[in-house]
Image (cartoon, rainbow, N blue to C red; front, side, top):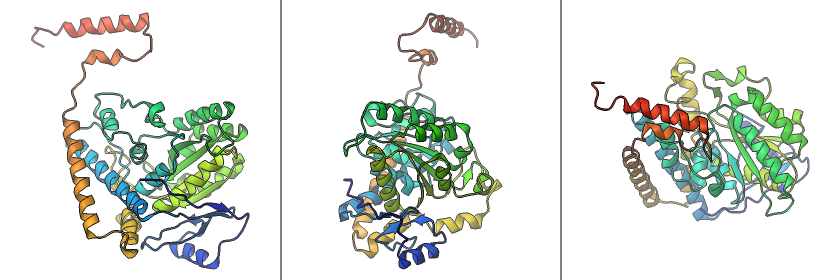
Amino acid sequence: MAKGDPGVTTRGRRAAPRSKRAASAAAGDPELVQLLTPEGERIETAFGPDGTEYRVDFTDEEYRGLYRDLVLVRKLDAEATALQRQGELGLWASLLGQEAAQVGSGRALRSQDMAFPTYREHGVLYCRGIDPIMPLGLFRGVDQGGWDPNEFKFNMYTIVIGAQTLHATGYAMGVHMDGKTGTEDGEAVIAYFGDGATSQGDVNEAFVWASVFNTPLVFFCQNNQYAISEPLERQTRVPLYQRARGFGFPGVRVDGNDVLASYAVTRHALDNARHGQGPSLIEAYTYRMGAHTTSDDPTRYRIASEVEAWQAKDPIARMKAFLEKQKIADADFFAALDEQARAESVHLRERVLAMPDPEPVTMFDHVYPHGSPELDEQRAQFSRYMESFEGSAH
């Protein structure tokens, strides 16, 4: 979909209008930037804690495009979960419930911007135009999930919790030192991580370096309420976005189940970064509806009523309600999209099952760009070991 102008403006330290404060209070969190309520009602303008004004101005086709992204991303994610349950993937980290945070922020990126994901940003990957089969090769164990980060401006998945924030900081320092900021065409960087990662030393070190070097970097924290099994209240005494203040840059909390607000807040932060105004932290307040990964059992540490409460805030249901109320989409559109999602998920499954198993010796490929004598010797030893099984009773 085309990216519309989010229409973000700044009005200094101005309080939100009473109607907006009332709407926020009704939503249960006056600190939350929200443009679309769980019932699908539009809020024309929202204000951040520093008085920044957020709004979006999309065409009907762009609204439909955002909904299409949400539906397709969820369906492909569900297919990957099913593949793992059937033994076709070794592991899968689902994004169920976090689609709006990922699609909204992913569509807010400009073509020149660079993203550093965790292992769960399948929605951002989709928005960057990467074939959704790519991460499935990684989780199937047949390749390293290798897309070209420079081509798609989207780095490789990072398994080590929080490490990508340091990678993003170093990259952003390079962008700044190369003089690629300060204009509308400037470059910005975004680093994704979860609430649990904020307790990692890497993330806090990244905050320090990003701040003192005034890097064009947006830290995007998807607060899905749990660091695997550890709830948020055991991770922090204050809202996560407020931590930014201690490192010397602004922070804002956005309704992470609201794709419109996620877009507007992220676009504003990225544009500030590209113009040389330094880093910022976005806390996307959302919920992981499924397990941390397919090796996790969330029923051991959270109750059903909590999950049900968040189901009422579902990002796709609220966007569909908005489209219906505004008569932007009709039954034929929804039916056609459901069929498209089904067809794409079936195609994805077929491609996964057709993936060839690699020869074991290929694990030595691409370790070093020009090889090494030590690696060559290891490869030779391993090849001799594998050959010893040929024609034997083993």
